[in-house]
Image 1 (cartoon, rainbow, N blue to C red):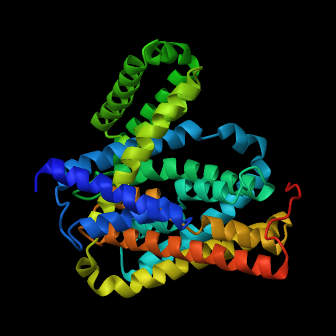
Image 2: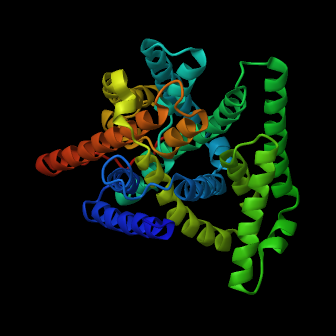
Length: 390
């Protein structure tokens, strides 16, 4: 089949699976992955062009991370730093440690155990945000705390991606001088983007703004692709460059217009990002690791659920709030795929591992909320308590 036909089938299948997710009130990303598994090499073998779909996937990464950086609120983290840092640190140490331990049990070396730790630790900001919207809990104390934890995770993710990207580039073993240079370049580039956003946001607005919607769209796309390309040439991943560009652009007065544009590209190409990873599922490649994937899903889910209880104890909250925090953060998503995409699957089938992990945790989170909803209705009680959380 022609490349055009494959792209057409990819988008049609995404629309159909998205409709199924909408009708079942489920999260979209896992269904996009299922679309890729069905239409790609794992089952029907219809959409097989990795080059074109892979390019769309990379563009999806750019806009997923650009929007994440655009919405990143360091101010919120600073305003409620005590509560959010306590919750974020508990979430990090508990779940990152579980992931690292799992990597060691599998038999991976320290670096790849570090990779597994990141895949297990990072929740999906996209899925969690949509979950809170579906539950009408964004402005509730519990919802605000969860979003605070996500902001903390985003901050950790930035530092983590810098390290992973630099270390993954050391193909022939770790050279501390070369690694230091790569890290230094990445940090300088990211700090420079934020500095430009703070000091020269008027000039950024001038560059993007136009009375013509078409020209404004082209200006925006040109800026995003140019900056991320420069970052790639300096050894900074497109994801990291896009994140900090989003932080920079968010400082300007054209915020609302840029947000509307970025959302469209995020939804279109972001869906292809998940579809592409579904295409790459290789159960045979998992081989002897199938059992470890099952254990990983259990560890990842229990880690967030128990972490939620530790957070609620540390903050003096009710058990209900701990359950809510744990269930909302169980889902893994774009970060797990992004990390696995950076390191590849030569040593361990990270990509297939991440796909199964996302599907498993999304299923557990969905079923968990369905059960709690039933119990709340039957017992005439509510999981959420509308009380301030300090």
